[in-house]
Length: 106
Image (spheres, rainbow, N blue to C red):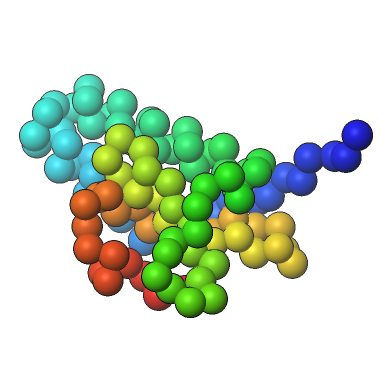
C-alpha cells in the first residue's frame, strides 16, 4: 500500500493578521466564545492540509492558477501546494462573500 504523502503547512504573516481580524469582528458581533469556535474550526481545517491538500478545488477563473480554497464557517482559506518542497502555503483567510478580485495573486 502506498505511503500517504505528508506536507508541511506554512502560514503567511497575512494569515495571522486575517485571523486576528476575524476574531475581533466575530467577538464584537457574536461574543468571544463564538469567535473562538470559528477560529478553532479554521485552524483545524488548516491543520488537515498536511495530508491530501488536493481534496479542495482549484480557484476558477485564473488561468494556470495553483490557488486552492476551502470554506469553513463562512471564511475561505486560500492556499497553494508546492510539490517540489512538500509545502502547503496558506496565503489568506477571507470572508467567503468577499470579491475574488481582492484575493492575492498567485
